[in-house]
Length: 317
Image (cartoon, rainbow, N blue to C red; front, top):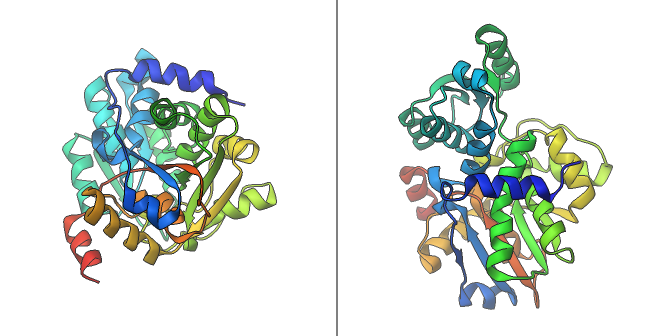
């Protein structure tokens, strides 16, 4: 079982490289929820999401031989961008298996950072199988998007910064896809705010994490259909679930409509752009999916990589 020492080591390695992202507040949001909300804005992180933290740290742990051979991963976009940028900064060649329906802005950014992209059909093909084939054929090292100790440690630095910035919290709400951010946040909370409840937030269409926590074992579902493309994961990672099962208090879900409402709120009130996946945690507070009244609440905003055309469509509805 991992502990907070891994997050501490990641923090030391990322110092001066990953952005120490801002924590924003909103009187309107507080009035809406009856709580004090603290928004940790990873949409201002390098590559546009928290994923840069884990990706850079994971590459920094490679051996010289692994660095020369290069790495491969699979991602719908944010991990792809983060790993590609991290590879560019550290001189490591990156190949990413990306679904054909990945947001165009994320594909363009991934390619722009210098990665080689291998496309696939997320509803018909296994991205894991494709990546493993590339590992076998080319001698690449697999850096998965969430099921990896170094990824978890890196992601946990975001919550660690949040607690350092605002002090004790009653609860921290965390977006949940594969579980890297949630697991890392749980490690940080256990060490820095042991009385703080840790709550994951998934899209209604993809509540595999909620089912897994309830059953005590990893539950696999069909690829969910949701606006939250970063949470279109059919199951949690094994490393992630080991931490989540022990240290996460509950997992709740929100609708796509709630994500759109939260996205609009961020633009209108906080003047920031947040992608649908990044709205998961906030939507839980805004809708009451997790009741927050009278509490000090940390809200992890995971990223802001949304295609302008999609954003215009969502805001027009």
